[in-house]
Length: 504
View 1 (cartoon, rainbow, N blue to C red):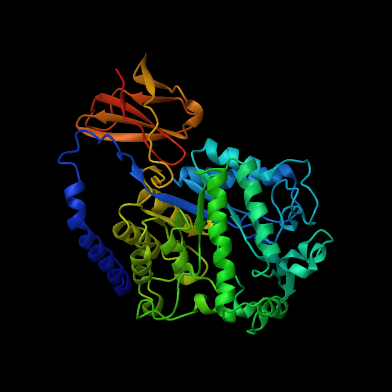
View 2 (tube, helix red, strand yellow; view 1 turned 60 degrees about the horizontal axis):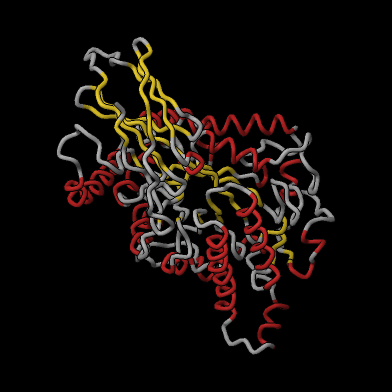
């Protein structure tokens, strides 16, 4: 074992030991019966699926609808098999749509021509939502709020916002086009898109990443070209500094969207994934880009105010990278999470060869578990990196993702558990079949079946359409333990788990 691995594992052990004093008292005295609630493991296990530049899906523009669906199924099956429980799918990479929209054109990255529908016609988002839910996974739509045109998007079509609303956009020196965040028209457009998605689709979350005002490198390291709107603001009597005015424009949109999402569907979560560093020096050892001053994103404020349901800072650095250390940054964001929203960091599982070390990724997951015991979870950047790394895939399934997990509940959205389901037991030779039902089955997202062999309890998490489970009467190992007690629960869209129903 290398010295680096020893250092990483040592950090993990120290962090987990630090947490063990507060966690030990919460453990059951004996593993003879699961507690009424919280028995199944709770952890947010998500992966980003990027469509911009066809990073993850579809593999290239212009595939047939059948080929697109085949690739989607392959990715969803991978996630289900490896016990992920959430998908973050990019549906608006450049003021366009990978779904049927009356507001914005079909995406170039889907069909190879902006404005052209897939052939034969289908709604990709509707397809993704159904297939994800049928596998027991949440589906979060990922949008870019301001990007109008990406350099990989080829020619600008007549339907692009660049052509239809030129007064809203500015051109950056590296070839990108950006909607001006300070313009109310920009905010209204993004708001309309978000509300349309929440209203028409059975999604579980709305998600933004780190592209607010663009990175300076997008404009040749020159200032964002918003002189027209800045001059208009000053002429109208505006008193803020230019930097504060830009930040305020983004703040207004973030708060507005949170309220509008909840007004439409309270259970739909709003998640933000900003750059992993708020400002250099916070905490003291941290160096790097100042997103507060360069991207005009006051991510700390959004977390402090609770304008989000989950927060996913992009902590794409290694544990031992002192100026950007993963656990140091996670600890700082944890201290800023004063309203106790979900804090599920983004981890980089393959952007650079330095990040492909299985030990590093597994250690980051375990550190997150130790530091965030009340709401564990990470988001993987990105799905392709997981799927291509067979060693990592096997290690996840043999290690931290060995057991299925429920998404942590969000009690500030809804803390009322559903009624308990009912279940019957039918003999089938050397097996027993458990059949589940519920008075309000349409409100149930997942089921949990708890079962006992000898003195050991285990569980299986079933998807919404899985209403039966076969259990062996006896374990197949040398111990030959007999099947004992069985109990079932129902889980709603917000993660609340019902009381148990004891199967007789």
